[in-house]
Length: 81
Image 1 (tube, rainbow, N blue to C red):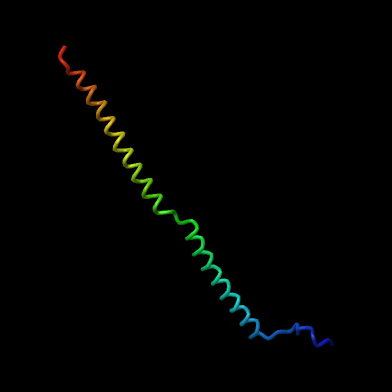
Image 2: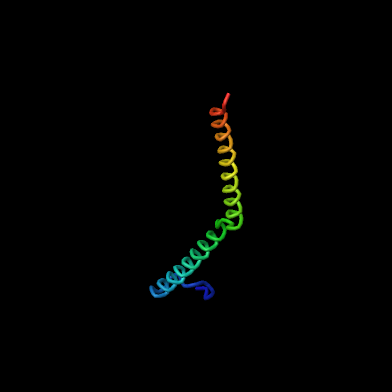
């Protein structure tokens, strides 16, 4: 037989050791993937707060205009003729 070829018969301890090594590698890759995906899909907090402040300002402006329109309509109804 050729001495450079690997022995096809492996010991049970070698198989268990290799299995444990692969489990460790898989666990390490899972944690890396989960941390990468969390940072990748995390929203930019600065833009969200700026957008929320802008939307709140627009809501206030819209309500002021609505109130002004309602006030003028009520005033026109009760105006002396």
